[in-house]
Image (tube, rainbow, N blue to C red; front, side):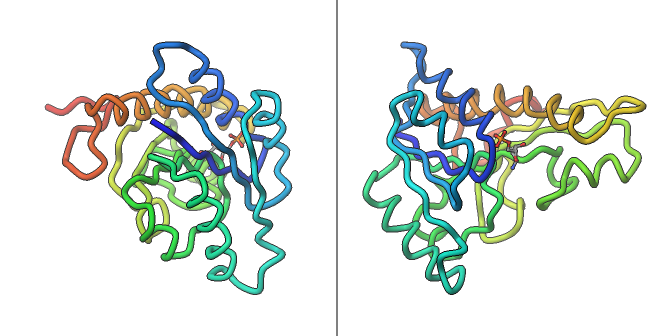
Amino acid sequence: LNLVVLISGGGSNLRALLEATRHGDFPARVIAVGADRDADGLVHAEEFGVPSFSVPFTSFADRESWGVELLAQLDQWKPDLVVLSGLMRLLPESVVAAYAPRLINTHPAYLPEFPGAHAVRDAIAAGVSQTGASVIVVDDGVDSGPILARERVPILPGDDADIVHDRIKIVERRLLAEVVRGIADGTVSLTGSTQPVSDPGP
Ligand code: GRF
């Protein structure tokens, strides 16, 4: 399964996926990494010898024209699956329409709880004792697509956002690798109604 991964930040989840694809039995490989800015995480692609591209959002007049260029870059690679792993940017409908449902996103909350760009901060502010990590299919909403995997992560007294987010990322990386493996071997459906990977049904 050929993956293109899109990031905006440090790319620690990207790095974990790159490391997972190094194992011979992992049924997917990252063929390119893209970013919506000069993201620090692009260094991981370089280190793993994976081509990368940057489509700086700020260089475009609007989301749609940014999306046209992003789509042109993605189409060059013809990925089987696009993985948003720390892309802090909503995709224009043109990109979603072109790739959905072969477009998944990791999110640091137990969706549908705490969607949006500040999930960890919001969970702490809500005073809840547990949040989570999720992998979903991207749709035109904000973190609103079908849930492929999700798992609870505790918030402990005195935790700050960084501590909680790091604890969540450990789970996100495992869920993402499980979901990618499942999509590659057909046990996870991007369109059907399979049970989320780590939340077994009744
Ligand atoms: C991850 O928690 C991802 O779910 C969220 O942003 C974070 C990215 O972290 N969208 P990193 O860039 O992979 O370290």
